[in-house]
Length: 208
Image (cartoon, rainbow, N blue to C red; front, side, top):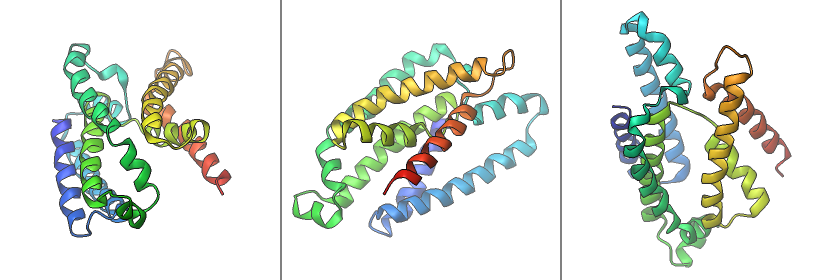
């Protein structure tokens, strides 16, 4: 059901973005609006929820690896690997798109088509991750920004490094969440949100 909700949100943002020729700024704004609407629907469901289930649901929404059913891992792995591997074939297009839409046209890339494909792939990948472990924020924002400063902006190499770096950052955050206030175990999304927000703020203030 979590993945089904992700697909619905993808369709909504995709349909709205078509009206603006898949302009990246418009897609971000439509995504924010969709996020606010769906968040309100989640809170509406909360108001109808059995109080005994409220704690478990709230932990999942904050990002909790402990809530993942281990028996579902063989189901998730191939589904996650498929879009993750396909993204590698768009490394060159991502490099060209980073130069701007106009230059991408001259260099033989069709930006609207590329944005559509990349939008669907990354949205499916994100939806699968969230359906497995809840909302664990900032990993996808922090890790690529840090690695870009270390290994450069070549996207094929950056994608592979981000997969490994994101997993490493999540494991370290999970260790902190389990032992920071032991025996109380915090949702890992709380730790990634705090550390990730501080790191991103530092990067933004340092960036020229």
